[in-house]
Structure formats: structure tokens, C-alpha cells
Image 1: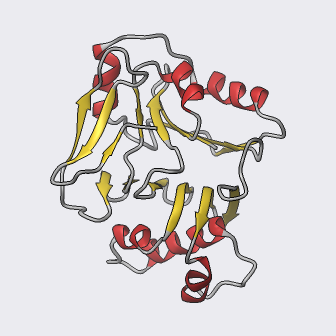
Image 2: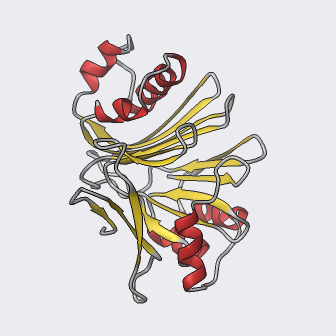
Length: 236
């Protein structure tokens, strides 16, 4: 899966900017990144959400225990990879039909977060059990909500393209060619929300997350660490 967001929607993460500045390396534009995804993935589906957001996904290479799904409802878009162990109980909690998949569930969970303030964002992700990574974009409010599970078994990476777009993908090689060293593994057990102002750990949302410069030979430029936690999110 791939999500590309212009800087007018998602502010450039300073740590990724700094990582790319320390070790300059070739990058490509967001449009070339999207084209590469579509051309290299069988049966890829892509769409533009307004002028500043591009989403794409494919079922190529997915496994039965880590399928990819896509859903959209009321201008809320969701890309989901993985599986929730407690999907049945969450369907009941949100009043969904038994046929609702994880992407549909995340749209309803996000809607509850948006419309039932003050409902903490970390509670939405904290109630999910299983292996997952997801991207939710609300076009009506230009809000982005991204998260990875606590084990990091579903890979998720983020980086900055040559034309200053923030890209998220489950394929590190795809982003490596577009983002150079302005690239990192998205920290497991964390979520990113433009509504709450950046990257947070959902078990300890008040704990600071710092970026440790990566070694020169590593494919990315930084490793994100949750302070006061043993969780490191830079390994595949």
C-alpha cells in the first residue's frame, strides 16, 4: 500500500528532513513514485484524493494472514494491511455488519474519534488487537491518521520525496528509491495524526519520541525511539 501527501496536508517531519540533510542521496518526485508503484505491481489500483493526496494498493504478494483492504465512506479513505484478532467484538462495538472488514471498521473508529471529542486518539489504536498497519485520510478535514501495531509484524515505512511530499508504504525498496535517506521505519506501537500534532506512542502518549541518526550503511536515515520504553522501530 502507498499513501502520498503534499506538505500542505502533512507537515514535513523535521527528523526525516534532518536525516536526509545529513546524508544527501538521490530522490524522485511523488508522481514518479506513484507511477513506479502502479507499473511494478500487478492489478494496482490508484486514486487521487483532491490535488494533494494520492493513494494506491494492490493484492499482489499479500498473504492470507496479512491481506490488504481499502474502503471509503463519506470522504474518509482507509488503506489497511493485516488482520484484527478482535474484529468481531469491534464490529459489535461500532454497530457494524458481520461482513465489515478492517478498513470499514477503521473508518468508523476514526469517525468516533473525530465526532465524539474529547475521545483520545490513542484509545482508538489501543483497542485494536492483532498485526496491522493502516492509513486513514479524511478529505473533509484534511486529517491524516496512520498507525502500526506494537510488534511491527506488518511493515510500514515513511519518507520525504524530492518534491517535499510525505509518503507511507509497506515496501521499503519502493520508498528507498524515492526518498533517499529521508526515510525511516514507522515506529511500532505508534500513531501519527495531523489532528493531535504528530507522532505519538499509543501506550504512553506523553512519552517523547526521538529520532536517533542511523549508521551510514543503513538504508534509512533515522531510528525512532520512544523514551522510557524498550520499543525501537528500525528493524524489519
